[in-house]
Image (cartoon, rainbow over all chains, first blue to last red):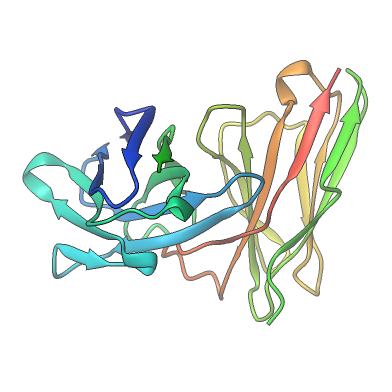
Length: 115
Length: 114
């Protein structure tokens, strides 16, 4: 069965510092890969996605992620965080060509920003 | 463009009761998925509806059931509530059964079972 691992439960970063959130997946073939963000009391919002092609993908709010097939990883990065980036971040996968949106999510990484 | 809306936002039930949660999909979307998010966990897939038919189901017992209506809105029903059913229930819609994983989520219905 496919699985997603986000090894960091909680990360604290100073405003203006760079950020990297880790995500590893376990699946027989390369799935579609996603990062979603959940602000307090809100639903999830799609930050970015990887289907194929260029392994560095750009998303909204200045985020980017790099797919590394050899490491089964899809890490999220941002060069300079803002206080509004404080939220819960979820990595998710779905098999390619599966025909439904049965996403498998990681357990999330909570991001705290300090002034 | 109207996003995904869910109701109620919060509710409290007791063990053994039944609950119905409602979801209106985003305009133009005909596929609705439901997820359960327990405290401190990532969302878990319950099931998906496409053209009023169930199109995929996660590892949830039959007391979790759903409906999709001709206007693409949806309901999630849970019978014989258990304490472990306490969670945030998220509805998500997507266009035309695309199967790409790009979901548009509502803000969720938080269910507390006492």
